[in-house]
Image 1 (cartoon, rainbow over the protein chains, first blue to last red):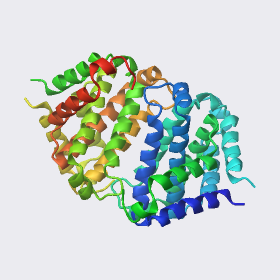
Image 2 (cartoon, helix red, strand yellow):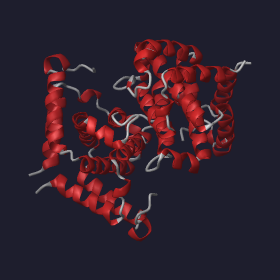
Image 3 (spheres, each protein chain N blue to C red):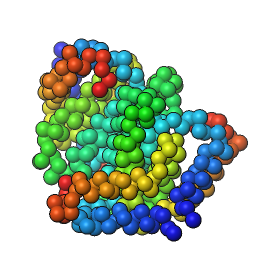
Image 4 (tube, rainbow over the protein chains, first blue to last red):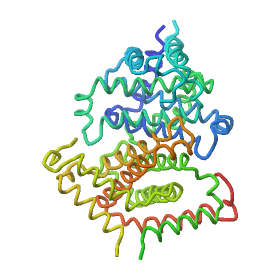
Length: 107
Length: 107
Length: 107
Length: 107
């Protein structure tokens, strides 16, 4: 079973039922990803991390879901394979932040 | 096979190898998600969508991978199940944007 | 007459009338600046630049005003002199982007 | 003396010396404002507010200057008068957050 393909299928079905692909060029999807990430961040505005999570768990789930949705739409539009992109990036990060130097260090 | 759990396992392994969970409260992860979304958007600055995608596909993959990585870390930290969050949000959006009203309409 | 000091005075008066300084540490103000910049950007989501400006001029003014407001609050909180900060940055940018190399070039 | 007009004059001179206005439609300037706000926020990533300000004051000044610069360029492009925009917004906020309800309340 292919979870990501399955999830992407649902998101694309939703988009196509509404004929929205015409608006979804990569640049506007990148703008939308940034806006959704801000919507998530807004739940933490003027609050400590704990207060925010406690108060807003359902909204937090909704905002994270929006980020995932636009990530899938962006990947679909640009032909990016999410799993292999993450695997490649982890390899690069492994070289950039070797354990012996990065251990316990906050950049 | 559980793709998302598998991907999350790798990301968490990377984090724990470096003892970085101590920095990863939900608020700082939300900040990081926002910053990574901006890094993706920056690839489109002053460019058309087509120019940007053409010029920067590898960087685009890397930035999208960073967004996925922080999405997974945030989900891990807050106990959010990504697949069920997206499914729930799609149901809400289905009511918010009914096909007969939303078809072909750019908000 | 000192325009910026005058404007800052009004913004601070508004804040202090509500006893809000207690929430305004620099990090949360930086979060807020980022959220307000997203609110401005949202007016352009799925639209061309021209469509957005034409449709939303009053909202655009309001969002830009919010950005200015948080810029002033942030400057107040961190003791930054806005005019000298811009002058210093222009000098640095003048070296970073010399006219003979930067002319007509989109980064 | 008109501080803001004076500052805007310098920023526009810098832009025009490089023939950059051609890239500066309002949408791309709004994208840039969002990116610059993220650059400022990045200085606070994984840090407390105090740690960040202490460590990075010069960078903080530079990033705030970039935000001011793009605010001025955006205002110039859209014909917004910054001072009157802030004054109008303060009036609206005064109604939206009346002192008797908003005093000491974090939203």
